[in-house]
Length: 401
Ligand code: HAM
Image 1 (cartoon, rainbow, N blue to C red):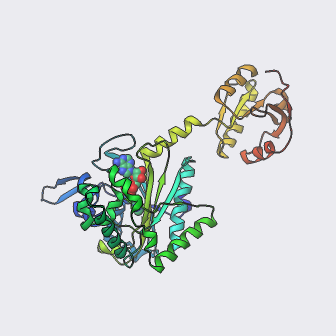
Image 2: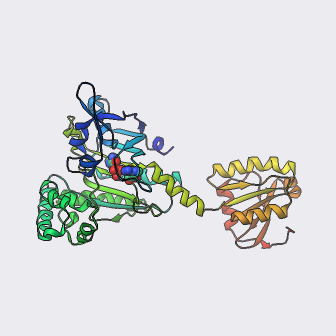
């Protein structure tokens, strides 16, 4: 499991938290806090909230249980329901689930790179192939004030073109101008100043190093200079995973650095970075990819003995990461081939009496339309078989089917 490989441990967080936790962390002027939280009063008058996200909750637990005193770096993941009173539509629910991960205690660029590699490994482990990673830097205490001032100046120049919410946010929290969903404000955004042009030397170097470390691992996120994310606790690196097939709700996940949050919530001055994936959106994306996908191999056993041998072969190929289907052994080769073609299989593995006697199997390449008799041994793994099939060979389809 990817979290174990990255040495992350699970933490179970409560669904109900005190309301002020999210006001202080997510931010008073965010949509989440202004419009979307489910609040209610406890019997003693305390105002509680169904958690809208996991990061604040995790940091609260980190501070409350003084995890910093136990370990210099905490690497934790969580899973569970979150609640936001948004207008429901495809991929946007009032109760949804997140898988999240947070690393607290490291402010170096290698930590950002590790979190982003964890995120991409997790997505590929789930089978997501077509998602795009977008990235931005949001600066820090040194350079963000200058950027905010530039945004206010720009916002004032837009006058009444901004929506009422943005006109109000202009003085309260100008970064939120870039997060507005109103079509008029979205259209104006392209003319706004960009944080990347206002970063201090330290933030610029940090960002460049993160990109450099990612590039060394073949990961090149797309710079999205107006991405600010919908929560106020971020600084420096911020990112989102965008997937097609999700419609308007195209963010499969998001995250970033929150170096001031632990201190803000009463803990030591330690840095943090993490992300969360939306599980329902993940399922929508995977359903789309599944529908488009076809098996790499369909195994066609001929007879009872072959059917038995097929079970072990199929199991080994699947453990090697291949998408494999198998036909029942009692049917003719012709009908098995027809079915494999209907499934769109790339290769059909034929296991007849001859093959079984030699401890091998034959393969029909459905794309190249060639037969590869006795091409591999029955104990072949998926990578071995792919290597053999990638090599030249095979002849015109001859076997009657
Ligand atoms: P977020 O971008 O608000 O970030 O949410 C993360 C993901 O949760 C979104 O990309 C989306 O897939 C899913 N999501 C959000 N709202 C809904 C909804 N109404 N219906 C369905 N899915 C939804 C956070 O929550 C941060 N806590 C992430 C983070 C962790 N940052 C640092 N560490």
